[in-house]
Amino acid sequence: MDSRRLLSWYAHHKRDLPWRRTSDPYKIWASEVLLQQTRVQQAIPYYKRFLRRFPTLDALAQADVFDVLKAWEGAGYYSRARNLHRAAGVALKKWGRLPSAYEDWLCLPGVGPYIAAAVSSIAYGEEKAVLDGNVIRVASRLLAEKGDVSEPKTRQKLHAFVQENLPSGRASEYNQALMELGAAVCTPKDPACSRCPLNAECKAFALGVQARFPVKKKKSAVPHFDIACAVVRRKDGRILICQRKAEGLLGGLWEFPGGKLERGESLEQAAAREVLEETGVNVRVGAKIATVKHAYSHFKITLHAFEADFVSGKAKAFGCQDVKWVPLAELARYAFPKANRTVLTELT
Ligand code: SF4
Image (cartoon, rainbow, N blue to C red; front, side, top):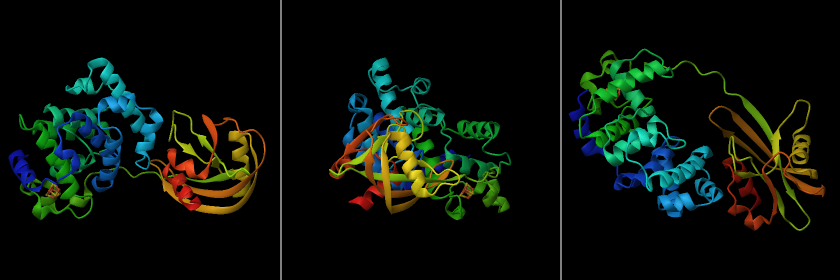
């Protein structure tokens, strides 16, 4: 790969992004964790909000995990926020700061080869090549790699290729340049090959078959679930919310009690049953408030939210970690998953 040409292109096309204005490893780390799941433009507001709330490693390590989840609200993949928080504590205890070496980064909770290579190279110049989705696309097209990129051996081959081409002393710019090239030029659809600094050596471009790469095996159909939930109100106007168990999907977040529709049930029956099973409270289900579609990484849901009146029972955490009756005006203080937050906007 003509790495010099790539670096020269990057010097002229580098976008002015908040995390590129800093050499603070903590900020670079937070940005890379966010960028694992979100496009650059969408990540910027989350990045700013998170760093306003937790401007330093110490601030993050000392925070309550639920405040961390609140600051991460809407960004998705909440286990990453929990891991950031845990890793901040581990790093401070072990080194009194964030580590510089790639291998030390790999010891931190939630840190895999991508984050370890990205932060250690960008913040400290470690000569470790990054292989994210953008780099995989660029490398597989340059090589016209026929192997399935979801296979470890294909990824190892692509990683070896980008690692071999890393110019000594330029790891930070090189990694950022490849990621930027994938994001801005070598895009999934209609790559702008005429503007690409590597087009003279790109095998896919030479053959006119860019769209065939990267090769990915066909994904099986994504399952879909109907979820019914209830916004249960007491006479005093307080609303019942449940906290999900700490481990697992959306762990530690708050939500309106609810769950999967079972065969033969109406949505209203499912909402009443789920409230009873999760909290021990009997309710009378009323009108529908909202229908929200949401996609997670491995499945999709349609959330059907209903009004419900409290009838009887003392709320207890049976199928969740905690339960609370909260005034409507205070609900915004709690971290909710995105679909539940959409329901919340219908209440206010
Ligand atoms: S020439 Fe086109 S396909 Fe090849 S790396 Fe550049 S943008 Fe991607």
